Length: 484
Image 1 (cartoon, rainbow, N blue to C red):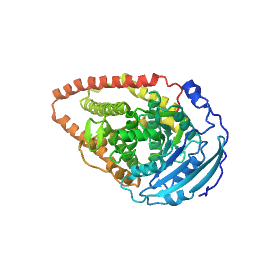
Image 2: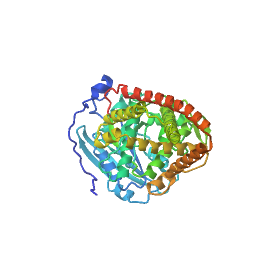
Image 3: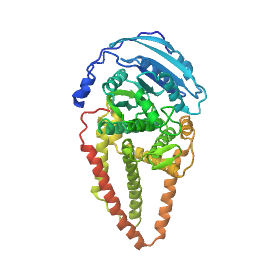
Image 4: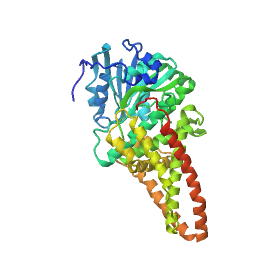
């Protein structure tokens, strides 16, 4: 590892205006017209838990920014690897020479040891160190930002005092990924990120979730959100999705939550089924808590909050996907068993529209590659990935409705270490349901079987037509030149 303390960095000069910037409107071009003067102070906080493989790259990317944060605090918590030792190599002052002029920053590494509040505790510890700055830049310990990301985020935040926070565009760098399952999962996650980012872009760049991976927050907005919610810290420990809850609170305090059209960052992806399952179940479970009317624990359900509309659409969409697939397979098996199956070419339209939509989403990626295109057009990879996502959806709602107390943070950490078999439960349940339906089908008489097919197929057909129309509307919707 290279010791970079006291090292000077010189950045290659690149055009200040992206080639597609004009499509975003003159307002954004005006914002980015002059970034030569630092008009604010930025304190960066990096919560780190067992990040020995990535922490050096994260800090190097921050020191390589055209706009370097004024201070960088690495807050290491509950770690059992060499994160502290590796991060400490960067400790100390750094003089950085960029195209925006000579800049100074200092890196501090804090090992807070055992911390029951995990990432939330690390973030709040970091906030206490930078609350006197104008902006808090939150960066995950596995997120590597593009060299102009901080510059772009700061410029837009400074341009409009209504902005409480801005998120970068997230994707996953798939070049170092090896192994069939890992590459499949990363391809699916890249598509998932792209679709989510694009949805937020097309909603006036209003970001539903200021993800902790790489977002800048106005400390004034954080203080206002804390006062309004009677909190002593910005992040609270009783939510599974601390970033989503804080985004809701900032929005409720009267601020805007935005996504930048140009600031970019590569985040760490999940390369195993168990790790991806645990992450998605935690995120979905936490989102359900925010959506659910009433009070669960100390997290108040806010079903009509504007930041949660996208969440409702996602959950309704997943429920529809589950119903259509399970019902179609059940009716198909039933029809084949009594010799009543008749193929119709109309059935090819929904998967064709789905493939075209996936292809269009892939082509909006800034760094689209052959794997992304193949994932979209081959249909089978995207279909398998949808079943994986459906399993997360089912597990999340089952866990929520059972009211069983589970430490989803601990389960995700365990899964990332290679432990846990819970991700296989939905498949076992699906097999059990299939066996039960087969037994019931054989027990009912021919008249009942015909009635089920006669009623079932039209219902599935109507739902599928409506779902296809929704996909088609997304397919033909203008995307205004956005690249995710």
